[in-house]
Image (cartoon, rainbow, N blue to C red; front, side, top):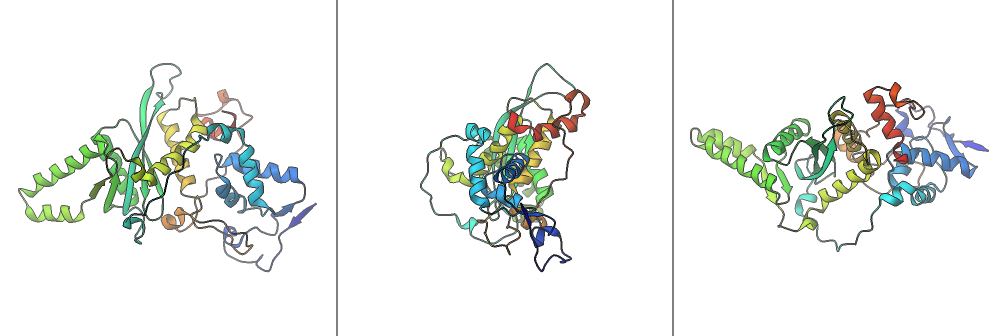
Length: 327
């Protein structure tokens, strides 16, 4: 037996995602097996997301009763999530820094860190040498939005190039927090040298650059718990990346596509607990502060049953995302 959601807001002219499940969407599926299949489908589609994010994506089209407990049960029984989830110790939480509590525009105060290395292959290469790349993650202190860049090495020049791309897309940041990595310290020293060079011929220009420059702050040495915000972002990125490309060597473009998809998923995660109220149609995410709406990926055809020899490069990476639970 299938029940449908019928309410007085069916004719609302606004977008479907703002008024909840439409009347032609399934409200409740009485058969537990069908509900389980729907939840498992969304869990795999969105890269094995956690319980809260899974329930948020399902409620865009469906409203299952006892959805939170059923989603928690599906995630708990997922073999891929069980194998990939490590056992970690709990830390005593300290006070939040003042930059986390001041209202500001996105990425004005950010944290940055690296993750890797990840191995890639050349385009059109089946066998041969593999090359290292690293993931550079920027995290907004206020809205927890994430920006991911790929870099070729851990030098200061590579980080400055990633920082330029980041500021060109997200805007200039006033403060940037990081650990005491050599690449970060070197980049900060190079910026200081640049200001010293400019200050000699033109003092006004130097003062303008100093006023518009980035205030760089480093956490204490050998204290990763001071950077828990970006460490959590790296953990979330690896959570999805390990399930997608574990044991597979991708090209640079393919890995870039996967990391950008992961960025969209992380920016679509709920910032607050989901409500069981039928009137709460949409949850607040970091994407709402970036583009005033949630990030929704384009619908893609099902390529799980297609042979890889008949697929193009972008179709292969799409198939990898669709079949990630088999890796």
